[in-house]
Length: 306
Ligand SMILES: Nc1ncnc2c1ncn2[C@@H]1O[C@H](COP(=O)(O)OP(=O)(O)OP(=O)(O)O)[C@@H](O)[C@H]1O
Ligand SMILES: [Mg+2]
Picture 1 (cartoon, rainbow, N blue to C red):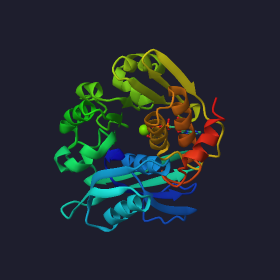
Picture 2: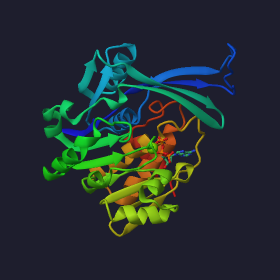
Picture 3: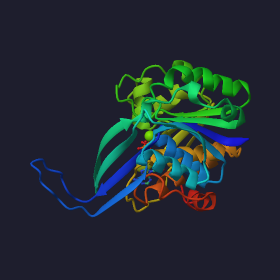
Picture 4: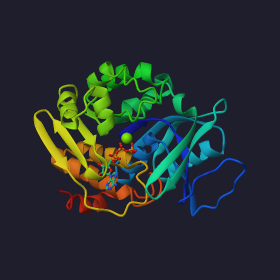
């Protein structure tokens, strides 16, 4: 058995840090730091939940290129089963350049193979072995979309659970979620996404609407923490202040903590505090995975959440 199977996109992040504006006209400027790291919501989630101690397998597609091998090696280095990562010489692995300055970030993404994974490419043996299936970046994974609701439904029929973080919809239509949400156990939007999906302008209202559609929902609120609902139960958690380097992937580390707590059978409040702690701790280092913590480290900070 595998605790968690992630069906996801893989790409690399190049994070360029400095208080510098790029300028056209062949202008060269110097920056403070450059970090090549594993990117993509699904991969950051997978690394986060593996770091918390669960067994994880990843199904995805990379190109047969330097970045593709880098992404796969980064997963494997964290003990993640990469037997479901297809190396496709017809694809090129994507990359995001993140320009990070103290108060803001700008991103340029070449999507590469991000949208290529289909449900048919996921090995049946991995699906059979998974207690829980997670999907991140739903709106970017366009080839996965058509088969995903039936796959989630089959997972629940065999007694397993499912979680979904759509992340941002670049088309801003926020469509196509009805059948998928009906087969989703744990839904993990941030405030803006929750409001867009439900067509409301208010987070509490979005939480109420989503609570009627999925068994468990958590809405992420950046430095303000998160709120969650299960049936008629409502909880909130606020992280202590942390020294933020960047918030890249904080939402994915949050997701990892929340799913981990729930798979352990914890109360909603305890799982939400663990999630908020994992999100907050991930902001202390550049990129999505470098600040991820063990269960003991996360539990220590979770006790300081309000
Ligand atoms: N500035 C911050 N200070 C402390 N904690 C933070 C900060 N930003 C994010 N977090 C933590 O990370 C969690 C998730 O962050 P956020 O609300 O940014 O999710 P998201 O929008 O899904 O992120 P992502 O950009 O990764 O998709 C928050 O609930 C919080 O616990
Ligand atoms: Mg997010």
